[in-house]
Image 1 (cartoon, rainbow, N blue to C red):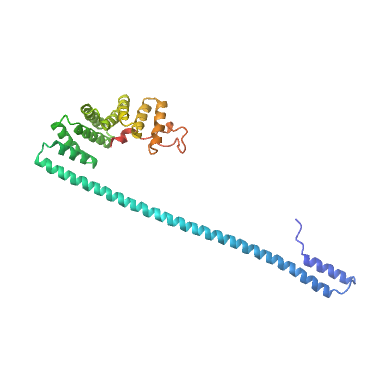
Image 2 (cartoon, rainbow, N blue to C red):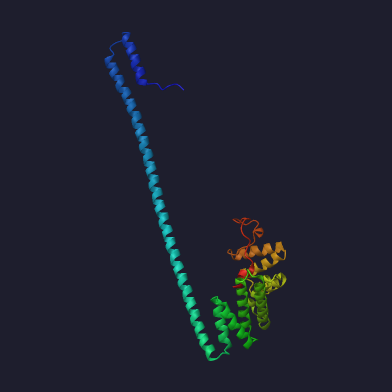
Length: 295
């Protein structure tokens, strides 16, 4: 690459060369040329300064914009965090109030039971509240007593079956105890259905009990009976899909899973049933079995 040409030096050298050759007075012409060359140099300097100023203004504008944007995002994040804290506090208060109300109701039922130990309604009500607050041993004791006093009351069998089923979930690591509790749950829930045929919720839990025992055909029959009474239920459809999946009826299961997911997007499904769905990955853990519906 050729070295840059110093224009001023070349012009002055040419002027001096002509002066030596006798081409006229050089002093005025040299001063004029110096002024012109100086003007050209100044223009280059001004252009560079203007370019630098323009770049500084652009950088300043974007710096101010991104700073304002970051401050706005920080404020929005702060507002969301405050809302989350507020909602968490409200939920905590609601849970505390619910627990206090349940404790109060248990105290009322306890007074009734102490006054008359054969009060079946009080035993069922206290057992239900103990179940809802996860005090399962007390719930089972009350409900077993209610069943012994009123064997024809479907409510007592229903809540007792639910209590056994929930305790089974807590004992899942111990297979023998788990199956015993699920078997007891199935027996009590079948009693409830036998005493009250129009009892769809009991059929739902009975289906869950059969599913946990591995009897998928009977589970599917109970889920189908539940759906006859609750055809809009996304949960019932999801449970039917799981039963069909376990029976190897993959096409039917896929159809039911898709419809259940359309009704309730929060419901999870096995990875191999998610063909064509956006955002699903084959690496996800398999969908939880219907045991989670036993609460």
